[in-house]
Amino acid sequence: MTKILVLYYSTHGHIEAMADAVANGARSAGAKVTIKRVPESMSDDVARQIGAKLDQPAEIAAPDELAEYDAIIIGTPTRFGRMSGQMANFLDQTGGLWAQGKLVGKVGGAFTSTASQHGGAETTLFSVLTGMMHHGMITVGLPYAFPGLVSMDEVTGGAPYGAATITGPDGSRKPSKNELDGAHFQGRHIAEVTAALVRGKSS
Image (cartoon, rainbow, N blue to C red; front, side, top):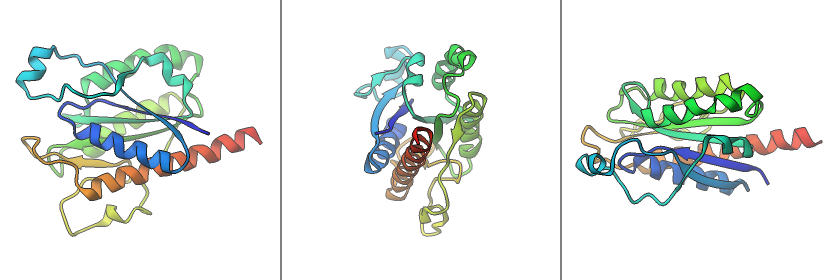
């Protein structure tokens, strides 16, 4: 059984919901999935002032534990077209893993959220995938085999580089069914790719 980590940062709960969908997709392909989040850099007082979701049950991850998994799927909201500072700070602490080549050959994927349709989803996904490639990981996106990527019936997030949701300027919009379906599809797809690679290494 392959081991997959869904690692996320979520301020208002949008990425948390997407992380659950990604994890369920990976589990549907037979993977053992762990969901963890990165540490919050805001104080509790500041977080409450901006309405951050403070009751997220996922445990806090440590950078070194990334080496324990066959695949890592990272979720982060967009911050000016790139990953959040909280996620960037966490990944900046993986230099030791990079120096030892601990993540080389592992599978990686990314998902995100933006406030608007053109709010930087693709550049944010690239900011995560680029770091993964520096680690020597094999990156997997959300293929057009997921029909929701070309849906014209509604406003929706999602790109071939990874699943995405649109939150609205005030964060009031929750992930739609199509967006959650895309996250589920990506999780399952990554789990299937990972399982095939693991089987190949062991044969």
